[in-house]
Length: 314
Image (cartoon, rainbow, N blue to C red):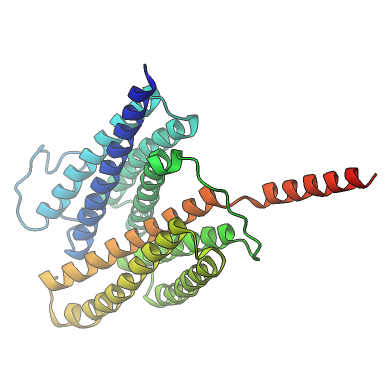
């Protein structure tokens, strides 16, 4: 195969991975619609629905069945991606990430089955929502890893600040993931909203901190500047959606015995905003990993420089 063919194949894999990521956004939305419309117990069996492949699409069954259809589609696409990566000209890490994504989506299906069977419903539902976010950032990270940008020769940056920007970015991503877990636990009735509100404060501090550090240390780097804008834009939108979702829970849910269209729209948008903020943080973190020298490389380079200076003085 010629180098041109190899490049084409790599670009095709990249585009397909991006498509899987976009379909996963639809899956997250479909799952959030189930919870926001109180449809989680609409179908009592799995994998069939009322013993049928296609049940009567009435009431909450519509949301639950749509969620299953989208989940099945994403699982098939992920299988295709994993197989394509296995036989494609990609680095071993990409192949491993492809099969990891498939394992995650299958585990996700298993947790969904546990929720349907009402086995520890709050725990299984929270775990189901959490694993969905982990699967999402896995395919997003894989997409970035397969991108033409990642494969280009890029200048290596030195981070002289403390703590390292890479470390702050990793902790920011973990804080956002933890916040999404708290939000999922609240939505599924594990506890009240207070832990989620505290988590929002922690995430705000981390996002502001990592953005300021990036702008201060690497203002001239276009890739990091764009990644910072991307993260801050989604986080700002998520804050607004958080207030809207709080109003929906505190006012709309109180005034109506059934979920309204506005309530479902605002709460689902908040869930999606959280997922996209997490994805933006993952992209920012991976951008730091790709561009900024690790602490070990910096120390090694400094040690080599000092050794050469000592040798020159002898």
